[in-house]
Length: 112
Image 1 (tube, rainbow, N blue to C red):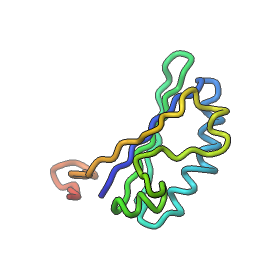
Image 2 (image 1 turned 30 degrees about the vertical axis):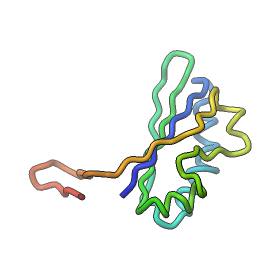
Image 3 (image 1 turned 45 degrees about the horizontal axis):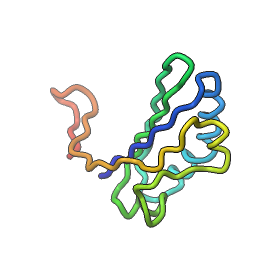
Image 4 (image 1 turned 135 degrees about the vertical axis):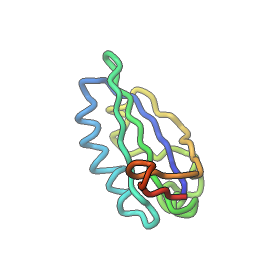
């Protein structure tokens, strides 16, 4: 399993509007791509800015390529992203998922 991590920063007062836009674009495309195993959307308010981080899980790098194209390390942007984001980071990070834990460790499920 592959974790793909993307980060963006928007103005705090535009964060809710950006998340609405993200649901209609990137999150919808993630969900529609075979091999996607979900996405977690994180947000962190920092004064007048809001950091948004997407951690998506993928079956394989081939599944990531089905979403991101032949250069999967490049960020995927949508036509109106520049109206919300203060910077357009060019690259994302990919990690092999070493383990996933659900529930307490004493009886919970470990996924390796």
